Amino acid sequence: MTKLNELLERRAAALDTMRANEESGGEAFDKAKGEFDTLTIQIERAKLIDNAERQERGRPISGDGHLETELRQFSVRRAIAGAAGMEGVDWGREREMQAELAKRAGRAPQGIFIPTEALESRATVASGNGAALVPVDHRPELYISALAAQSVVRAMGATVLTGLSGDLDVPKEGASPQPGWKAENTPFDSGDASFASVGLKPKHCGAITEWSRNMIQQSSPEIEGLLRNMMARNIALAVDKAAINGNGANEPTGILNTVGIQTQAYATSLLHTAAEMIAKADIANVMAKRAFLSTPGVRKLAMQVLDGQQRPLGVDTIFHKEPVSFSNQVPTNLNPTANKHGLIYGDWSELLIGVWSEIDILINPYESAAYARGNISMRAIATADTACRHPEAFVSATGVAVA
Image 1 (tube, rainbow, N blue to C red):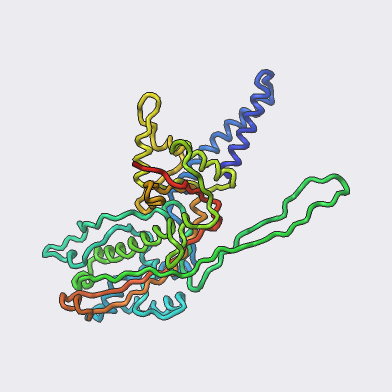
Image 2: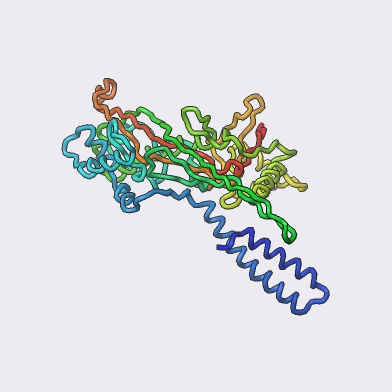
């Protein structure tokens, strides 16, 4: 498929030919005009596809497609109820899958494994105390979720790697021999290609929660969906926040803390700063799923910019019609004393998210506080990591001051 930038270059060349033959006209002008018109149509199509790809969620890359289909039928409710020893729960399918999940994880679970495939492609909205889900007139379809930030990194186009077990090294090209023009009988310059790799290692994120026994026992499809959604949202948000600004200690190294990303000092205005960031990405040959990501505070700042007629300039104009998203997951305290907000621009497909598929859930039906209420205490641990394949694919503003 022809890349958008190639089409733009070819149309620019056709336009130059039209200008050169503007006065004389003739066959050369007509041929260039025909090519210009054809390329214009192709460019509009390419832009449409490019924008659709930017809006598409990061596509998971894993191994056995048949196994993934089976794992997506995994019932979280039955697995938890069975592990809790509840009578009358048929969790044979989920129990049989534990051997395969342990093989993929490279270890036995401390409790039971919940595959992240069972959580994919489902809305990541829901939280709260399980006991509140079983009133006298239970209406799970009207469940009120907690107010929470929304996951954005996958939606920006990050590359998701699932089904991992051990550490992962992703090879990448380093330096390569550069061709040069030489006179006849003159030797060409020699050079060696070099290669590097980007590593991802399992990092663990967990929490202890308490769910009501009644909720786990509910056979309603909506209850199954709520359990999946709680886990999916919490995992997604934890990975999301770390991918943006993780410190690299116990958590993944986020984009803003990755060595080698480009930086841009605030330049006169938000409009100028965004233009400088785009220019740096252009110079670094950054392509594909380029987009801005910042905070709601920066969105407010962009909405307040006025033109010469005192009319709003518009967020799209401020960011030069590049895709832009805003999230509370982006830090607002890059410089706490100056109230500096984060602003990132780049090719989001260069961000790798590695997910070691199994979520380890340990059920404790005898924890004293939960036991007294007839509830179930659970500890859930998820394992993931993030890394930038090419750090220079991202440009970070050193801080946007928001009043």
